[in-house]
Image (cartoon, rainbow, N blue to C red; front, top):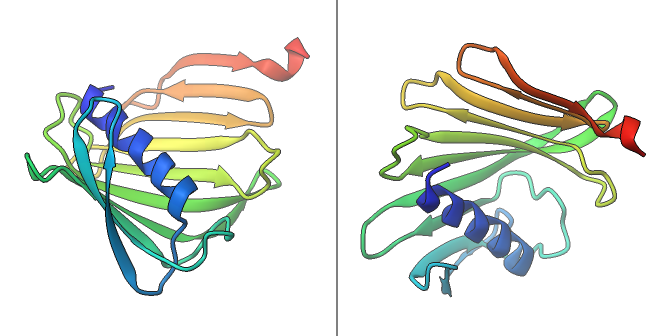
Length: 156
């Protein structure tokens, strides 16, 4: 994955952990990334304790390049018996990998380790997907071919 996208994802997770988000007023702050650069983070505030603040948004922008990522929490869904938060991130990033959109499902239960991350190109085509559900990890490519599969529940 492109280093810039990795930095944006790291900032996204950091910003959510620090600030939370909701459908209330927005706040803009500046955070320093692992690369030493400063990024502007705009988020809806007020629900720091909510796990899945439906309807909330967050924008991460590099003021030097104009590259940005806008994340929106769409709702909750139950996938294979696990309640998950559904989030979409639209990226305006000069990416060698061609990623333009990322769809994420993360567990509501903080003790649950399952997740799904799907990456899309500018045309909405799936580029890759990584799924970890109930100890089974699967990675697929843009053609739907399984490129890696592992069952961690058998190792316990």
